Length: 126
Image (cartoon, rainbow, N blue to C red; front, side):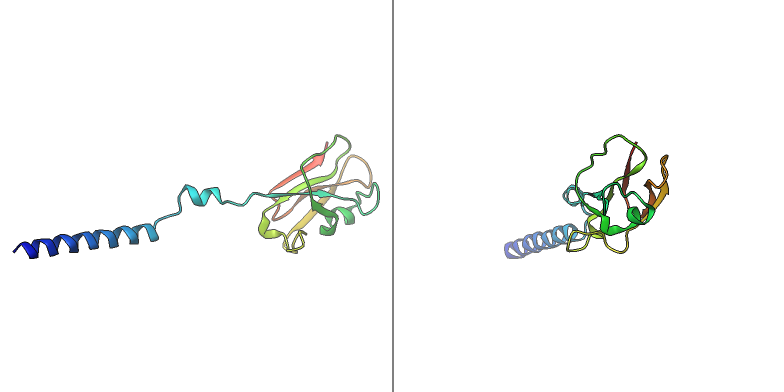
């Protein structure tokens, strides 16, 4: 009889351990998963030639390079935007799924970013 009780106790312990492992394996992500969220990456507008804030230049993804968010004051002109890391290719450039739209600022032929796809933040010079 004592062997039976010992066997029952061990079986209950094994079952409890199995339930604990299963519940951890299938539980929702906790704070650790939240900590690994990807931080948006900032891109600065780099004119292809000095002072080129034309529509075609601003919407061209090749004229945007990784940098920091620092926009000096001035006319409405393209400055920075942010994207999630999943929209950046292995060369550090914006992928083709990122589109940039531009509108003319207060000065003729000077454009600023007015929207686009897969952008999380836009800053233009004031």
